[in-house]
Image (cartoon, rainbow, N blue to C red):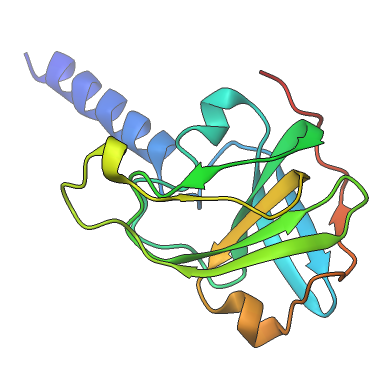
Length: 159
């Protein structure tokens, strides 16, 4: 009787560890460099990774973020479904330039219906979106026109 219970507890512990808050994620990672700022970003290049994004997490390390990778450059719309902390959005062109910024986006109030969530989008088409903790853009002095570098090159988008 004890062995099945131990096996069940071990399986649950492993499943919880796999879910984690980003620290133990198996997602690919890249360093995103903008000026003197380096963000160690998880790559969200599939729908399964892009849809939840950073939702459901309690926090994000100060130098961490999530890089959303798409196949083409076009208008993108994001929302804060499931978010528990505020973010800055860095909208990045296919040419690897910052083309727009959305700062200090608050998490939704608990219980907000999906249909009532505000959406956020850049003024121009983008291929990449970098989400970081709110305040990072201002602290780092990121501006429209800044060059962006990825190391290593992020994997191409899949669906």
